[in-house]
Amino acid sequence: MPKIHGGYYLKARCVQNSTISTAPPHVREIWDWILREVNHKEGNSSGRVIARGECVRTYESILEGLKWKVGYRTERYSRSQCETAMKVLTREGMITTTKTTRGMVIKVVNYDKFQTPSNYENHNEIKTRTTREPQQSHTINKNDKNVKNDKNDKKDIKLHQKVDYLLNIPKKDINEFIGKFNVTEEIVKEKGEKFYYYCLSKGKDKGKDAYKNFKAALRNALSDFGKKLPEDVEMAKRIKATQEKSNISSPQAKELINKMKA
Image (cartoon, rainbow, N blue to C red; front, top):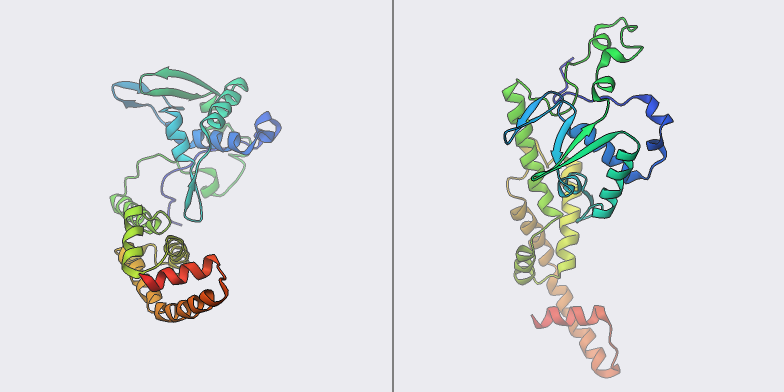
């Protein structure tokens, strides 16, 4: 069986008996994020020695690291939620923090105890080699010696960053699409979101089948959509004639009339 790239970190089951198990979701998620981020071995950052179980981070980097997607929107926890979580984790004796000019040094208390596999009672009771001798890396930030795999991972990351364009279309591109294809901003974002999930479902977000330029691909999708506009224009003409006779007004009618005028 091939090795899993990136190493691992451990979470003891006894955490279920601690206060953190009933803490709000953002507190539990920030705790998990810290476990992933701290060093698995001593390192150096800007001339400062960062010990095993420590990392230097800011509140902004924590919030950035925990952002998530809702459709084409990017959501984040608030600064106050992050500060509250850090206070809870400090109060419970799970971390300590020390301010620096670059942020704060976050230290996981008892890191060696909980991140050393041999400290767990069942570690040596399993007879098979794969479970008896797990991969000798204690966090996910271990440098992989396999350069080829590392390059492939970086390539996949770049492709995912490209497909994310479909959910975070720059305003200047939206304006370009509106002017070129006579569509609304809502249509551009809706098409981008649908195209994003299409790429994921078809595996076109990575590998050899991925689109090289997602802006160009979205442009083609909007171009196909724009071919249906003449029908809308004809409908707008009929609606306008009806409005002039009955003085009826609706947002949908106004939108179609604006398409006709454009």
